[in-house]
Image: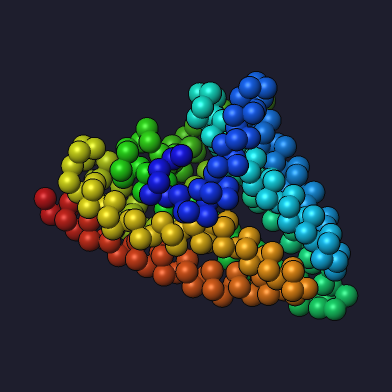
Length: 290
């Protein structure tokens, strides 16, 4: 576990525990974490095939495959920590997995509803997926990493800087063996930059906060302020959205999921962002006045 602070009960028992069992199996079989990530990507993308059909039995198969893929998505990170095989490309592929799953799921549902909805379903999915979903997941992931960074420091978190990743990317050449690393750093830098753009108050606070020792009382105070944001982060990332997706498919009304994503989850994102930015601004004022 990264920290109990950022793990919901649903994630702990429904995702984390089965993922840990898979991780132990893969460790015994000497399977690399990146291989687990790639298997999860394939299984999750293939689940979308079963969401194309207006048949509950086939939809259930797709749901089970997506749960299976999510176990692998959890197992790869645990396996990396268990074996010490933690790499930047592994982390990036891990984050990329969910994007691949939902791209194919959205495409399958688009094709399923097109005869009835026409261009309307395309516009709804484009707004819900390209704008709302992307921003929600990026912010939820960022807030969890900020929380771990504030409590445990740089070594206990995966919090990155777009400037640092951009400098690393620019130091590599396209016409060399590093071209693939340069390519994924290009996209990863853009992703990190999108997170930073949503959190201007935290970006002002970050350089001041980094100077605090790990035992500074302000870090514990930041943890207490950040802790209520963690359930909201879990809501806007995977757990809640996948439950609503399954319920909408079971009801034969998959379009409900996109409405939910564009309204309820977007409202949660806005509220979480407002609260987080507010207390980051307070901390910035305290530290800048010291």
